Image (tube, rainbow, N blue to C red; front, side, top):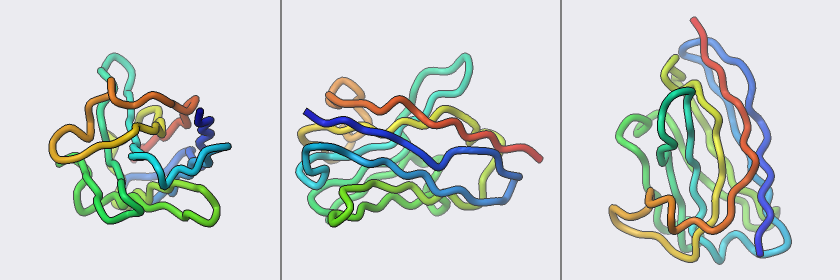
Length: 126
């Protein structure tokens, strides 16, 4: 069982940065594939990034490559998403999630993720 709580969302201007955090308990998140997903109003939830095997593997959606960085702090049992060069289309509710494993082009398969946080809102405006 993993409980996930996100924080760090808020408002930013186009081109700005935000850092999302997700703390897991009581399980050790490094034992899981940890992912960030987002859902904008009227759109389906989509995968943003994932990290696995103590950060040895990381995956990104094409829309965020080069701008977002996923990382984790095993000592604090926390997952992060550093978001730079934000665009208006990055506005969404962001969720962290945990899956037993992930890899290749399946990291964004939402059905694999058993545990989800409640989400944190990100709003980007010009």
